[in-house]
Image (cartoon, rainbow, N blue to C red):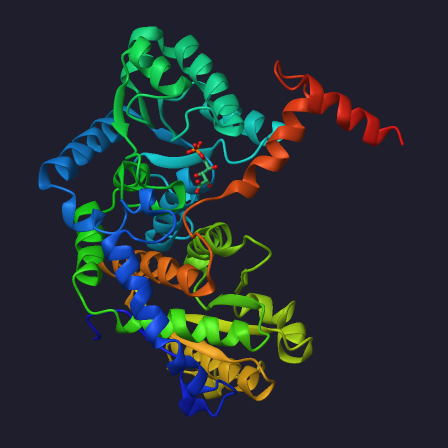
Length: 442
Ligand code: PA5
């Protein structure tokens, strides 16, 4: 088995990647790494993620594990409340490691998510599920003021206090937020919650290896020490995979491939792609630049998006996340009658069929003019997911600097909030409210 994730742009497939253009970006990629290391690039006040894995102490990880254990022992459900970077990393790792039908099987404490939407029915369904059950809350917000998690927390905190009384509730709530600032910090201090800090210099989308991601992952029963150890391996390794990925995707972008589709052939990776979309979308999509990050789940989406990818506008490229070994073994049985004509597959692992679908699809898409990168993950384990997370984070910083943007800010996400607050008549938004009313009445 491979010991590490690997990235390849497979020039050997005969595809339309101009290797000279990829190689020409090497100097910029090396400069980008230097800017990250020396902190001389834009956004250098948000580089706390760069040496985060190797700086997390054994004591910090043990403390997270102890909190997780206490929540697991006292709760049937733990609701992780957060949105964007305060949600997607934990969701991605938990889904990648979990039994796909975990929710329907009896067993240990289940981790649920809320505060990542403003769905009234979603919240009503969740509260209906939690009614009469022992539950806990991990509320996560770096700013401590984000509307979606704040609404969910207000509702669930109230419900927990009604069900268990204030004292028990305060022991089942953990807050992860800024060290000093924000409404959530003040509330946590006042109510006496256990808290963890999101470091100032780690942006939300780079925070999965802080308590933001690690606590919910540990509550779900996964080994956060192995996850962090995997990340450390890439942090301390060479940058060849980072260079291959960052240079190739920028060379393709310069050649008119404006959309990158992250492809998986493993349903457990759906949310890994959602996490990746936030990481790359928020980091690179600015100044009217940036690859649009999209994703598909194959083979499922070959039956919906396959036609477009094979034959639509040629502005796309694909990055395939390929998983080496499956966690389980399922063999296709022989059937004497063979009425379905499937006996040619009898005795094969289901994954053997999946792998041929993967290779066949990659060849077909390359033939159709869709350049193809491949990221191989030896297996879906904590260690390899840790490697993958850190690899994507570092490649994102390098890629953003090659593109020429500040990969560590996100000024564009404020625009909808301003309108929403004005429309809801939040105090302080009177002028915006008037301007919107004038626009709407035209
Ligand atoms: O990456 C980011 O900065 C954002 O996606 C934030 O994580 C998201 O908006 C949630 O913010 P907060 O943690 O402040 O509630």
